[in-house]
Image 1 (cartoon, rainbow, N blue to C red):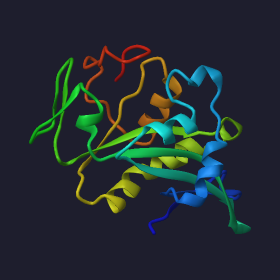
Image 2: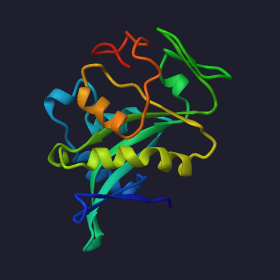
Image 3: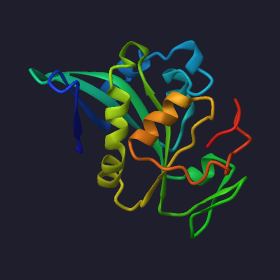
Length: 185
């Protein structure tokens, strides 16, 4: 099992990314987001019931004093067929982008539904997890070169976390205008 960890708050907590196991479902179903975040991410129960053909991952934290007592503070999913999932991304042999369509190749993996439980937001867990994503995905899915995601333009907190973690926008002018709650970068 692949585990990556980052220290948060320097001496207090470790953040780890790993694949979700069946035993994790109850904890994941208990994760909540604030009402103002619901336009950008669904409740975990809806995600688990409705998402097919994807891999689920959890974000855990432990104190340095007690590695055996990990708690799940968030989760996300990876989509190996991101071109199937999003109609504005088409499958092709090269990766390009335009104002309306991003072309996804067999070297692209999608990142979706990234969330941190509302009780644990503002403590650095999201940023620590986002900083690990590229290494975690590379180690877990070595066949993929790129990690693709979209962020709603109104979700400035998420965009800031991703940019701080090293994600780059293909172009601010290349907005997907068909998002359910507005344009996405």
